[in-house]
Image (cartoon, rainbow, N blue to C red; front, side, top):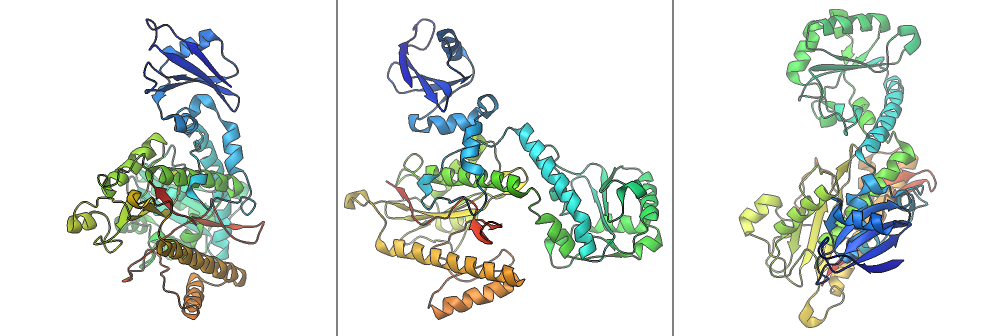
Length: 484
């Protein structure tokens, strides 16, 4: 329903207003004398009276918006007063494998994350489930205790997986976590038991707890190769072993898979997956907006401009990131992915985006202690040629990249069923590539490469109990973002 009515110019901005109903909620759109500046005002559920409408016009909850982004902007900026439950349910509650994600970037929309208070409650719920599973991990590897000692701003690598990121940002003073496999009631020790203390008394408390548990083997996070398993800082480790009674120090050992398994737990199950899927849809929507004429003016806009636009857009969405987004221009005389970030700009200068260029973005957002990671491709249509699609060669290249994703997904499923390793999956994917005469790259961060990537893509998958396979969390790109 849309209702046009006039306002008094001497009291208000002047011109006309629209009363707009969306999903049972009502908004005011202040159109202005020239129908150019439009302001939206959140009025809450139910049909408002004219008095409420005019009161809304005087209110502070307003923003300039593009008409086509009305629902998206209101959803992101006004969640605290709007409470759009139906939107979350519509996009995020399907079980993995039942959800059929989009193949085209334009099929995604901005949808609000819960308010921070609700995010914190969710994180703490997931956290309790993670805590409950740590003793089982310790037993799996033959340990009775996991001991983590850290200081403020010098935390163990596992620490971030053991807190709610919404309300806790670092360890306090000296913080010791002790997980154990014994009965909580019989020992009188919570699991985990946590001490926060800058005084020597903390070591006596720790020693008393170990006396009560009498562990045969104590895990500490020390590893020369795997970063996630090397969380005990050198100085803190020296202090720990100096203050531990010798009999307990002698029972300390490292097992790299304990911290790895604690960190990689999807402890929140479907609830956590639903929130991650919601984050992924927002990333897709943000890429679709960033790779459009709303942001890019061919011949003027640079790759760096778009990178900073993405960062600013994240702020309006109340999310952060774990790496600065990277936008790369592929075209005649342009570097592609040979160099990245500042090195690329310092060597080649500003990368101005022109018609006929292919663009690549590597981007992720952070919320509720989860990080997304996505790489998509776009094409800038050539107006002089009246293009409506990329050249066939680019379409074919994207298709080959999708085929390689299919191969990786297939061998990951087989490897999971057979209990194989990632290396086993990689070997079989490469063998299939060789048999099919394909060139391509499958990589992880510890591995360097000297191959120039032509059609880099990255999407997130999760294991689905429903399909007994690896399924896309939100979807995967099978068509270019088109700019023009």
